[in-house]
Amino acid sequence: MLITLNGIVVGERVIGENSCFLDIFTDKLGIVEVMAHGVKKIGGKNSGAASLFSYSKFCLKKSGSKYTINSSEPICSFYDICKSIEGLSLASYFAEIIRYCATSEEDHTELLRFVCMTYYHLQKGKLSLQFIKAVFEFRFITHIGFMPDLRACKECICYDSDEMYFLPDEGALYCSDCYEECRGDIGEANAFLLNPTVLHTLRYVAYSDIEKLYRFSVSEQNERIFSAIAEFYLLTQLGRGFKTLDYYKNISFNL
Ligand SMILES: [Zn+2]
Image (cartoon, rainbow, N blue to C red; front, side):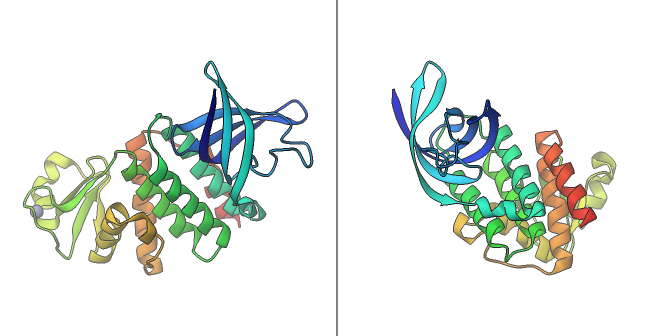
């Protein structure tokens, strides 16, 4: 049976001299593991479309539960990400998140569009990596079902105050008064103090249309707070760490 999908290559394992197993994040089936014969051969039939971080149209042959590339057509390559070690390590971290989370066989068209936009900005190099990382983490995790309630204080429904607290474990907001009152029950761990700009940023990234996600900026200081929250929220909700994240941090720290 042949099936046509759009997808981006987010992982590869070389088999023998010229072939690969690819992890392709597809619009219709989520992550699919695909055998790609001869793609490592120079000038191989599918080598452009099947290279890491290429977004392509794939015609796959399915036999049993296994997929093989029948033909492919490159749409857009983000291979230039690999020119910077920091960019590559961040792209690899995103790829590991996608491989771990996007496994369900459902329509992922929106998420795939967001992933391609993210890789586009990584390749373009105009936005800071910290900003791209935070937007990706926070939007990705909210998109796959871990949407925090950022509408108002969980206790008194206050929408805005100069100081609000975000609790990643609960995915909830508290105004400072309610936070003080509930502190005994909540405990002091893992609460982020938000100024109005950071709260607006979280709401914007969680609730805006995908097209708007990279079209805003925040000050360096607020970007740092947003970045800490985004990473903490994603790791808390998934309940695990990522080796590629450790590697990225190691690289960034030493550059
Ligand atoms: Zn309140």
